[in-house]
Length: 341
Image (cartoon, rainbow, N blue to C red; front, side, top):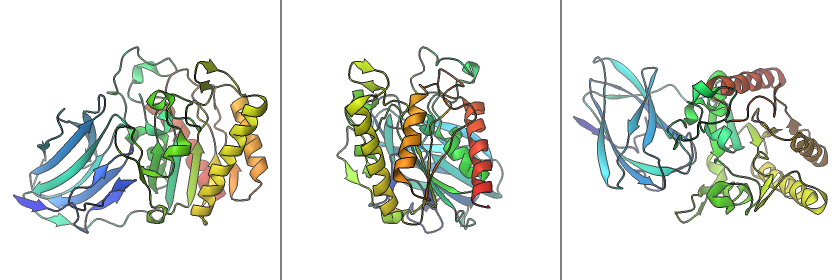
């Protein structure tokens, strides 16, 4: 067996990944991934998993076939062997299926052959700020298309690989970062993430954003997107014990903070365009009106409004794989036409 360092320059990474220890990169945000090409008939990974709740599955794609690894519940490093067919060239991608359920470190790679060079990552870059839909929550509950979520699913149906964001990236093609967390709203103390404790206003500029790990800032210079998709607003109706549309001072406060966050991102990403949207998960139409108002208030040619054909109307439960595909295809068509790709 030949041991490969995760810091090898032939290995590619995508997502907000903590690489401060290059020999043990930490995967935190949903959809963050590592990929490489190799020869030989054996592949073994050393993975150290840290569970908050559930969080025992990570996904991989080997030679075009998707599968998953079941991880240990303790936080010790464990060797995970990946079945490999044939001695020739193989392409492998390891990705984080779920959001804050867990985080993990990749501590080692072993193969029987050689590590190979991959083609460079796509030059076009996208970042998607969002909630559970963007993170790919419950997408694999395909028996529930157009219906409510199963009563019990404990994250086994979560799979960021099939979120509209990652499907879109494969269609364009593009690099993509998913800055997305299930249940998150714009404001702290609203939404459902960590019982409503943290909102996107706290998480958007973090590398480590998980409530059970000390937070750390993200270095925005590490990834400069061409396009930012902002899909926040679905969970914002939940404010403590109150649910409903915003009125009066609350509405103005939400609009002001949303525009301020966008302005900060526009400053951090001076070359990026922005799309303001919500998803096809059912929501009150007034949230669409709020985004219209935000877009008009910002008044920048870099900031555009996008509506899915079935925005807010398609399903009372999380969009499943085909519904996520519907969103990805609509976005891909819009981006290709708008930006002449």
